[in-house]
Length: 94
Image 1: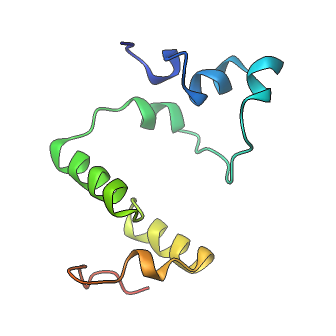
Image 2 (image 1 turned 180 degrees about the vertical axis):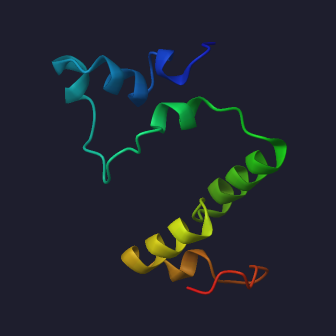
């Protein structure tokens, strides 16, 4: 185990941080730029409720983020089907 995500030698984050030619050959281009606080975000400890939301998003294949960001992504990439459906909250009005 490691204390920081970027120390895990089998992760893309580790390879991006090392930034050498050999590692770069193994990485795909990112679809968007990483946020300035990316390392901080990756290394933060999630609260139990936040972890449940992330797990739900992974299991269901839905977006995860704040409402403004999700709304932007839904519009930009035509992802309405990822937020609509049985049991979905009516808070999402995209």
